[in-house]
Length: 236
Image (cartoon, rainbow, N blue to C red; front, top):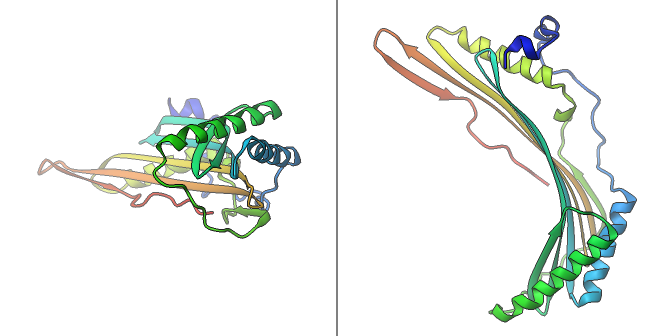
């Protein structure tokens, strides 16, 4: 994909110095009432089926990545996954089941399937699982302390930033090749357990990368350096 085919407003976008400051996200994520009802339904279905402990996780994850080389776009992807899982303890044995269909009927079915799996797992149980006591958290929430949601930034602006970085790297004497990329992840997690815990988290991870290769044409040697040294952290 050529730059001119992607950036229809190339001149205006190229004039941008940094990514724009957008509306900050809410300080804390909020759970939808219907989602909370389905979580409580899953816990009740698991307890009714015979679980001594149960928890449910609903997760929605969005991944976005943009890659460039010199002044071309090499990669652009944006995907999202969604699903929920129910984990239970029955007589000291774990059971787990999951689905992407978040409906009342599916919640009941998955909770019962988790209990059935736990009963089956008891046959190979060496010793029962004992959980440490945990404090109740009836309404917890947490969000990564970000100022700008990276998914609110237009793709065109992200591409323009990468191409400017590439151009700056190629401006150094000896630099011949450069690749750069931006990767973003947003994890939205709702968690509930029979220990009177209900929490909502929104966790962001961002990873910029830049790799430059310099060539010594006189001696025939080359050297490559990558700017990203550590993977992003997901805290919550």
